[in-house]
Amino acid sequence: MIELTKNKIRLLKLFYTHPDEAFYMQQIGRMLGKKPGVFQRTINGLEKQGVLVSEYKANARFFKANTKSPVYAELRELVMKYEKLFKKGFGAFILLGLASWLACAPAQAANTKESAGRGAMTIDGAISTAFANNKNILIQEKEVEAARAQILDARSAFMPQVNVEGGYKRVGSVPQANAAISGKKDYGVYVGYENDNQWGLAVDQSLYTGGANTANLRQQQLGLKVQEETLRALKLDAAFETKRLFFGLLLAYEIARIAQDLLDQAAAHYEDVKKKYKEGTASRFDLLQSKVQVTKVMPELIRAKNAIRLSMADLNKELGLGVYDPLVVDGKLVYLPVAITEEAFLAKAYIHRPEMIIKLLGIDIAKWSIKAAHAGYRPQVNLSADYYYRSDDYSDMFNQRHNNWDVGVSVRVPIFDGFSSLAKVREAKARYAQSQLSQEDVADQTALLIRRDCLNLREAQAIIDSQKDNVSEAKEALQIAIVSYDNGVGTNLDVLDAQVSLAQIEQTLAEGVYDYMMAQAALDRDTGNLSAEEKISDDKKPDVPGEVPAKAEKKI
Image (cartoon, rainbow, N blue to C red; front, side, top):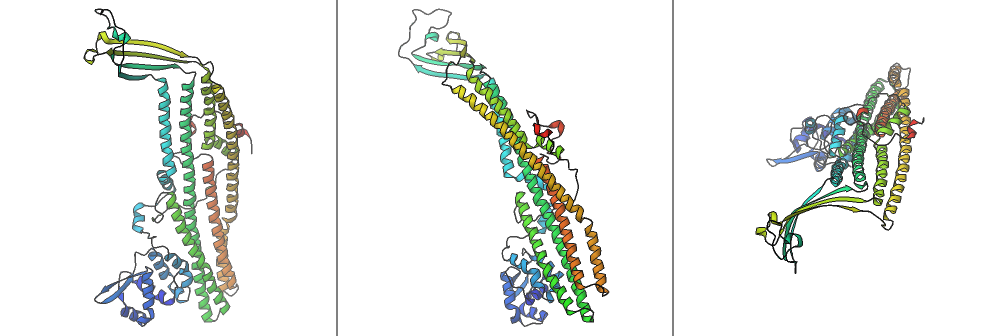
């Protein structure tokens, strides 16, 4: 942390008034009316901290403002805006927090040109950016692709398997024919050759597997829907987190505005009291009280501006951008009340919430697992066909005398498998019962979430309703307090209290609107409601086997 003195404030005002000009020591001394030795160490210290830069010209060292400093714009704005307060000793309070940040923020250069090139970020744009850069979403999108491939693999079990087969085999002895039969097959095609070469085409087709292949295909199709709903759940979480940070940044801007207004009011009132004190119409107690009020509200502004930086860094991280990247947001805190109907919200959540859909799909997957396990009790029927050429001489192989074919059907009937099928059926039934219990648990959790969201909406709505009319009344009360004090009827404390009351009411109202918007965002997430482009309409709902649980019929 740097110590801010009057000399530093005067130097900064000189350099920030002429940001493109460079000055040498003697020139600075003449302009400030001081000897160079008085401020030489101060200038060197500011250069080390990156506030100033220097270069040598004609054996003289010239200093100028570092316009690339991460705090240049804000520091310059504060110095120029509060010049009068600096002279009265308020500079340390205004820049104390900023000076602390200066020591640890060399990498926080915010280039406004880059920010303008990117354009203002709306909430919809922020959510789209989060979807495009969120690693968990990108990973889950690959899981969806893998699930589609698994469906194709499951379908392959219903299709014939066609293979080209060939090989060579040396046989010690084979039966010999007494004589060749003219116009017929070569005898070796049936019994083989000592140098046995064979090439052909083999086809295998599964005719009946006891329902195992069908069950596997249905499980993979349901598994794809599970992965798609998991992706939607991740998007809902990402959208909610983006809204939380985006609205939080808007709240930080609003609180900073309120703190800035309070500081401006306190400073203006102090100037008015000081004028009255010189005229003899105000006491020294009022003067000191007004001055202390200015110093009391300055830390709030510092904290508010730092909250903006922190909120912006958090939002950048969520969007997959650099934490130091400049970001301009386009939006404001708006109170848009909605009708709070818990039963309708709960019914919608049971139908559209991804976690509910996944559990319902899990029940159906478990059902098909039972059918797949029962296949172990049933026969297996397979069809096979071969067409091949066989000879002891490759040059005399692919002709009518050396070809042959066969077609056959095989049946395998299980008699005893060591209770393996029985164990699989019992396991599948236990998994099915487990999936039902899991679905009921998620239904209870969903009801709790909807209940909580509705209560939060009502709480925020009550706060807003209690405060929205008070802002104009607090502003009127402040004007009355100022006029009364000017006329000698009111006290200085009345004005200070009215200023603080107005700021508190405005901040409470802003926080209430933020809480209401976040309660709406939580309700969107818990009811499975994405943006207009993403949400599922009633006529395009996913084909989810199973019914809406009975708990959707119950009243809260």
